[in-house]
Length: 454
Image (tube, rainbow, N blue to C red; front, side):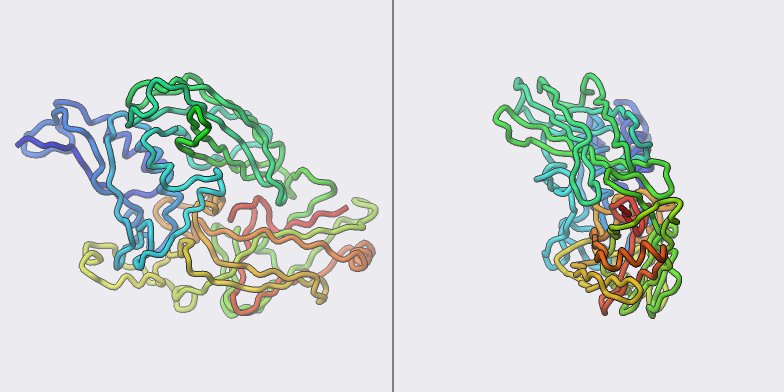
């Protein structure tokens, strides 16, 4: 028997697991190899492709209905890292019954991958570009503030469209500093774009991390001579100062209050997630915190107080009310078995066109000082910390979930009272849409309930 293709299927979650698996396949692919062939047959020079891959089977009890954007970017990045990889088939274009693995929902409505918020203009199309920049690094790394990090890059070309041309690779390391987009490092490299396949770019780029707590993004864009983007890519970093209350580039003193350290709550359904760095309240209710401010010996005068936190609505799933029911993820799911998706412990709906809103209020000692409309209960690649601090690779805990930055300034008359009392009750109150609060190792902002005191 002579084969036109040397192909294989895989469904594996976890960056390290995917990287190891794809590397093994590639290393065992060469003329004369017995790998992936049966009956005494040997590999010839048939091109290697992955003829089926996805994000649904590589989990205990299946992925349920969860974010695929994070996994998809690093999987495509790993495919493009290897010269022998000639193509792939992703399952599937739309969700199907019992598999929620599509680029689109079953009815054709959009899912939101969130890539454009890392690199302006980026979409799925960038990961499919014939000419591509591979970032040979994990999707997120935990690093120390002010560290220097070397990032290897590779060029991958499946097309001769730009061969013989000089392209420009621009890079930018940016982060959100308490709501302000800040560039920490940037640069550009001229690349002679010659030849097919995968080759290393001569030297890694070396970038200096912010000197504070941050979720930093290394965004790269390959441009042609006219300045048009050829492809885009990114990775992220959880930058840590080592300070208990965090370090941020802003005036004043900071106090971080863990989101799970509430003194009381009044939600009918309440639970913590992501190794205790996220707390959820379903339906209407309150989280109440007893806040202690620095003493006068520590800070003589407090005349200005800002409160920041990351929050989203909280959509109640069947498992949140009735408990999870995980089932063996067998071939019966392909035969129309009921997936019971909301009872699957891995389910956390990927951001899509359907919205789940919640209105919340901020109160100090019972007096309302601010309100926010939280537009959704999203989960996608933007939930960097919720992905980075998953406990295991094959079971999800609200993976990719994230919220919105909420910031309120305490009225000066109340700040004057707090200067004298040095303590208060902070209440975060939700209407019917519920409330999820994201701590230092969850969501997309590197803090808990953060008080800025001046």
